[in-house]
Length: 194
Image (tube, rainbow, N blue to C red; front, side, top):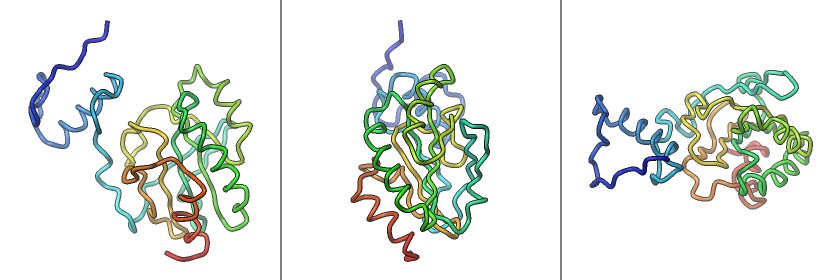
């Protein structure tokens, strides 16, 4: 039986945390929140992400065995999207994102799909991937390097043609892609506007 987190006052660290630094505490609480089924409101975000600064590198290990590194996609607009087969909002946004990616591939749009599914769910991931116009791979863990622990999905990060972070998914209140959001966030980047 899973142990329920105890109710504590604001700022009271959970017992057993030896390092009281704020960053370490937030990361540990984020981990507890994930383990507790997301009962805690909002785990830590990656601290190093800054709009207009170089985007941290990502490498997608695709289902067909290729490695696609964001650093090799300079000159293209890149959307790194994190999703799972069991996530309803993800499954709603994927066809929208796929259609948009297909329509704008000639303009230099590249979407990379990172699935948070477990390796045991690979057949389900493959079924979804077969319907999409962009490459998919399993993330392998909940950590995405400098993008932090992926604690909510869907979440996406957009990188401009110069390799700079243009949209930080952790800052989006409505993170799922819609046609309106794609027009607002991605269309100006494809048109060469910052």
